Image 1 (cartoon, helix red, strand yellow):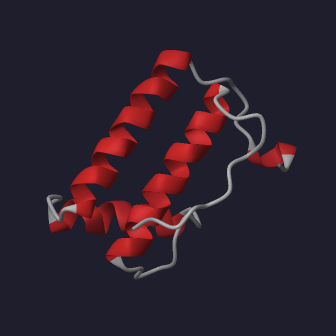
Image 2 (cartoon, helix red, strand yellow):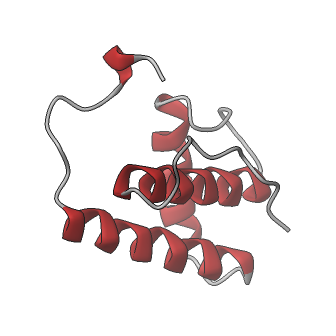
Image 3 (cartoon, one colour):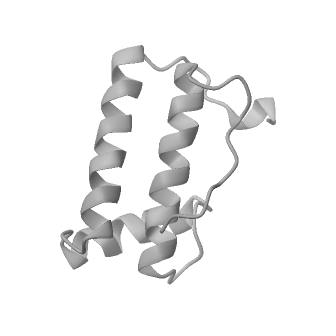
Length: 90
C-alpha cells in the first residue's frame, strides 16, 4: 500500500468498529433494496469522486464499494494480516 495514501493519524478502534457496523448495515439494506434512492445516489457520487466506484455505477457496484470499504476497515482494525482482495458481492 502506498504510504502517501494512508491517513496521517490513526483511527480509534471503536470508531473503526462503528464504521464496520454502519457499512455492513448499509450493504445489507442495499441488498434488499431498502435504502432511499437519494441516499444511494449521494453515497454513489461520493464513492465515485473518491475512486471507490465508477461514475454512474450500478446498484451492484455500489454494494461492491460498500463491501470493499468494509473489508479495508477490518484490515485497518487488524483483522487481516494482508490487505483484503475484493470478493464479488451476490
